[in-house]
Image (cartoon, rainbow, N blue to C red):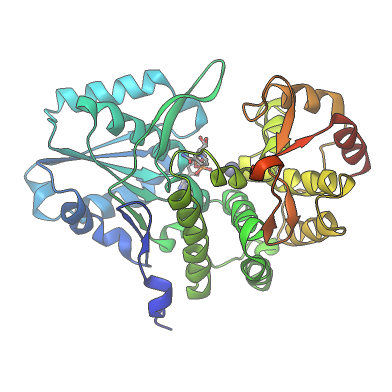
Length: 376
Ligand SMILES: NC(=O)c1ccc[n+]([C@@H]2O[C@H](COP(=O)([O-])OP(=O)(O)OC[C@H]3O[C@@H](n4cnc5c(N)ncnc54)[C@H](O)[C@@H]3O)[C@@H](O)[C@H]2O)c1
Ligand SMILES: [Zn+2]
């Protein structure tokens, strides 16, 4: 079935577009040369992605790649590479390859590559264009959109970085065919979150489609055209929110639903949960907290728990974990000021709650957190 125009339409962000189209991986070269023409193109990827997709992307530059104007570097995979050391090595590599200001960076990979390569581009000779080619579901609907780039330090994640919007985001759902199912599910948690904060119908469609497709049996066909449409709708949610709040001063905080608890879970488990898995548990936990505060409609947490567990995501606080440990981490979460804990809570599925003076996060007292965490 050929995808409808609605599926393949381009999504406007802030002067750049997200294109979602099966087969786009073979058009990266042409699309990049159109939106960010350059003398040299530097593809940055990781080893897992390179094994499956780098040749296709390099070939898509056609005769340019024969002339040696397309260079590529694959770093080892994983969050441990999102460092200033790797930023320096990549920048040095570009210098020694003769990249000048007329270079475009192509970030081919998940959120790690996107954030890192985006930051290299943001700083290389005071900034060169980057084209994001996300290859994880999380990157397609979230991290590649909105211009946040950066690296981690030993003191925490994303502590050094810059806003640097891409020249374009090129999403080819076909590349998800090689993504491990656990990573696919983790991305699905963010998609479900996009629905939960903004669009009840989208929420129902994602959960229904994922379940019908048998995601819980690991035979999910991510290249299905119905799924392409859902990716597109989720990317559009992120794009709309980024448009309304380019510098994360307001509505963008809504994207952090489930994330206060998720960040605490990630830290306390020493990042043994994938981010999306932590978000899944966080969505259930934070709506239980919201229900206790009479901010979230009763039954929301239960509905989220059912939906997320149906698609194979974890929904419970890992056994043996103490609420006190989680709360201690939440007190220093960057959204909180002076130790107070704030969360982006749902009013109901499809709608975010607003706090004092219209803020997008709500002050949460610790008693409600303890009571909710001990109950779920
Ligand atoms: N900039 C933002 O706005 C933003 C938003 C959310 C998350 N992030 C960042 O994103 C990062 C997480 O991103 P992620 O979940 O995509 O993780 P990731 O980039 O580590 O990718 C997950 C794993 O999948 C592999 N992989 C990626 N695409 C593949 C493919 N098509 N086939 C086979 N293997 C593939 C990778 O090599 C890696 O092992 C974190 O560093 C987080 O801070 C940034
Ligand atoms: Zn997230």
